[in-house]
Structure formats: structure tokens, C-alpha cells
Length: 387
Image 1 (cartoon, rainbow, N blue to C red):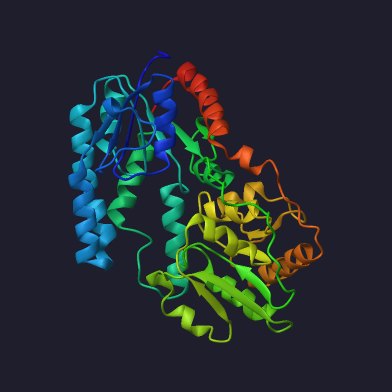
Image 2: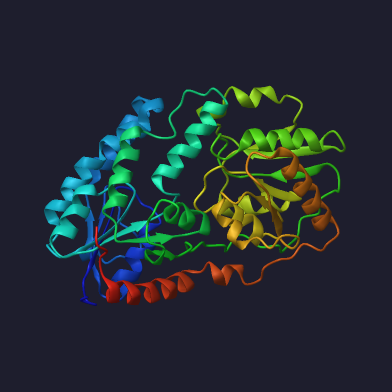
């Protein structure tokens, strides 16, 4: 395989794919960074930045005009973005993208001697759709996990993929379980800037009430009925408060009102410096996701010295050392979650919670770059897969 083959990174919005583009640019193997936005990404040479802002404009206008249909409008723009990138794509170029954005570009790459690389930001599309659909049916919520056409395009892009970059074992397993070759799913956790997240200076938190924080979106996919039920169980024995961020997904609008007995301290979306302080004002961070490729919010809490309670379906659970910096509990199990939250509370209030001083290094851009370079050696050697 040609170790000098160049990569086109194509994503209609700014995303984690920007990190990969920066590494490709640094080693002289970026053919172009294709975005559907007005502005490019920091660290990408202007000569390699290709922008098609009409895609972002249509998506923005659609979301403003039809808030409940905004995501569908965005997905409707994917074929346009795909066509635009394909027109500029030299034959033999490798394409790096994520689920459903560049199906036609993936086809062109494979037909002309290029490779296809996929960012597995969430679990395999078939797994994502099944798990979240089941959850919505469980609670009689008539809302699709996300637009069906996106799922269909995502499945097609997986069929055309040679290599998957996976941020977590949860994502990796979802591909292997569906027959994707294990040796072609490469572990690559995303870099996270944890500058504003540190246990110092510590917050002076009273022991009561027990404060549980979750700074992620409030939705069925994120397991919030089970977190609310866990809080209800805890409150049978002690005072406890749930700290959430404003912005409830339509899947939870009806359900959240069924827990008037659970006190909720709502906060607006906060800047990183203020978010770090809010995290430190809690005893425990809990995120009981049914589907979550790599939970940034859990990393931020852990960096602040807050023990975390996560499910195996929450990608960042790979970094949990049970009994030290958090607990891992089964999905859809409020009692296990309640017990784990209390154990983490006792760990925190006893001063025995373990703070991973290597976390910032493990999630640094330098570590990400080093791992990606190692993966490229494997990719260059083995090339595309037989499909």
C-alpha cells in the first residue's frame, strides 16, 4: 500500500474529525478538509480548507423555521454535501468521514484505489437504532432516535468502510458483534481539553444533601428515567438533590414531570470555567446512558475529582476503576445505580476518591496524535478490506 496516499476529511459540521485532519495536515497527507461551514478549523492550512457554507446556512435556517424538523433538514443536506465533495475528490484519495455524510465519496474512493476511514463517534448504526428505538417504545414515546434516512446512509457508509476509529470499547464491540473485522476497528479515544477541569481549588460541599450532577442532555437515550428513579430510591433514606443542565429532549418532556418528588437544581449551559466549578459542587456524577460513544461530560467530572457512575454503554466507562474513581452499573437498573451513587458519595466524603493525575495526559492531543500515527502504519500496510 502507498504510505503517501492522502486523506480527504469530509464532515458538513465542525466535529471531532477536525482532530484527525490536523494530524493528516501535520504529516503532509491531508488532501483537503471539507466543511459545510463558513469558517475552517484551527490548525488547518487555508490552502487545504474547502468550505461549502450553503449547507450550514440551509441547516441553520431549517432549525430556526422548524425547530422540531431541524435535524431532518440537516440530514436532507447530506447528499448535497456529498456531491460537492465528490466533484473535487481526486481519484485514489482516501476519505475520512463519519456516519452517512459521504456515501458517494466512499464509493468513489473504493472504485479508484483509495481507502475509506470512518469516525465511530457512536455505536454501529444498527445498534444505535435498535437500542434507542427499544427505549422509546418502552416509554411509549413516538419519536425516532434520529431521522431514518440518516440511519440508512450510516448503514451504507459502514458497508463501504475499510477502517473504523473507535473512541471506546462500547463502540468497538458494537461493530465486532455485527461482523465487522475486529482487526480493522482501531481504538482512538478523542482528545479533550481539560484545562478548566481540576480538583483544585476544592469546593467546600456540605455532606447533606447528597448532590448528584449530570451535565449531559436530558433524554431517554441518556437513561434519565433510571437516574430519576435512582434518586427517588436514595431519597427514601436521605436528602438528595439532582443537578441538571437546562434543555430537555422531546423524548423526556412528559416523563420528567412524573418525578415531582425529586428536587432538581437546574443550570443553564455554562462556559468551561463555570462548568468546572459546578461539577466540583457535587458529590457524584451519574450518567446512565443506553447509548453513548464517548461521554465528554464524564471526563470533565473525573478530571475535577468527582467520582462517576456510568453504564457499560457510556463510552467513557473504559476509564472507570470501580471503587476508586467511580462505579459501572448495568443499564436500566435504578437500584444498582442508587447503590453505586451512595458508594461513590461515601468515597467522596471520606476523602478517598482517587484522582487520576494522568487523565489530562491520556486525553491530550499529543497522545491522540501518537496513537493515530501508529494506526496509520497499520492502515498503510494492510490497505482496504475485501468487500
